[in-house]
Amino acid sequence: MILNYISGGNIHRLSFEDYYKYMDYLSYCGIPKEMIDIFDNHYSNKDNESVVDYLDELRSDYRRANYKVYEAVKAKKKSL
Picture 1 (cartoon, rainbow, N blue to C red):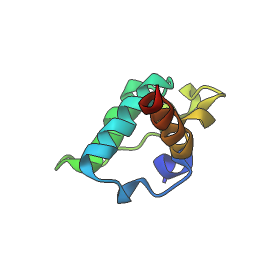
Picture 2 (spheres, helix red, strand yellow):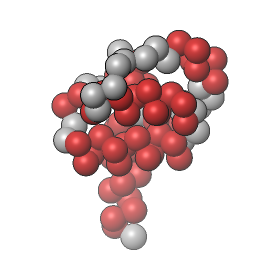
Picture 3 (cartoon, rainbow, N blue to C red):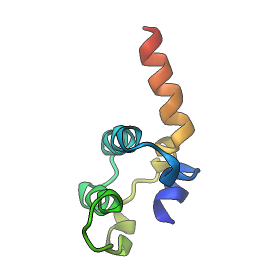
Picture 4 (spheres, helix red, strand yellow):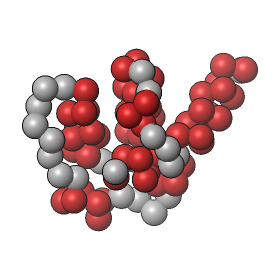
């Protein structure tokens, strides 16, 4: 649910490849690596972990991690 809140969408519907590209983008946006590692467990056989311990580390500008912003940035890079 936290990932869907950050992204503003239903991330579980992404393909495997698109999911990991978006995870790279989250890292670029300053989302804590430990939190991204926990999100990575969604596509693995590892047990789910809680990201609660890392919520205070989210920067106030986490809104740029929204998936629609990511798509706009990706489209802009392709057009350059």
